[in-house]
Image 1 (cartoon, rainbow, N blue to C red):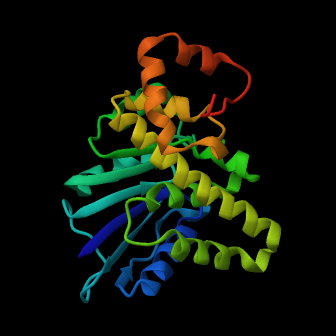
Image 2 (image 1 turned 90 degrees about the vertical axis):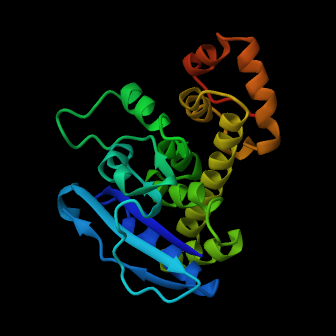
Length: 250
């Protein structure tokens, strides 16, 4: 078994923190791992990326060849387009849909969502929505860790141990926020996939998730939502236009 992951984002989004959690979880799980240094314009809000590899056999290089990447994990959605060609045919994209608009010709979000939805193996989460609900917008990177966690060889406990360890020196409140961000991301990623696997369009699925209270998301509730949206085409627009979030249980 070998897993190759490209971590992508922009400077200041905490790519190194994501790598820390995965690297240490890999060690706890008994894997070999290698991680390339973060490359990019980290001090200017520019694009940054890192290669991360873990395996049950020794790894001799920290560089992921084109066409050999199992996952592109992006804290910024446009950054997916920079690295998609590294993916295997069955590789996954896990991405935030919360844009970091750092260029003048940044695409319209609906256009970008449509492009992202074209990937056959995709998890999209509204990290801004989930991080705010967790208590701090800066925890978006831990939301993405949670969203990816369902596709990795680590237990929830192994990952949470290092989420908590990463922020321990900043106090219990910060630890609690980032723990919650991870759990919200994990639930949202699973809920999104259950909606899509049930037949809902991926763009509609992530837009619905952006209006669902994260503490209520559960895979078991997804089929009912797919059926409701299939029978009432105006329902999603009504939810999106409302001024408040809704419970997945409603």
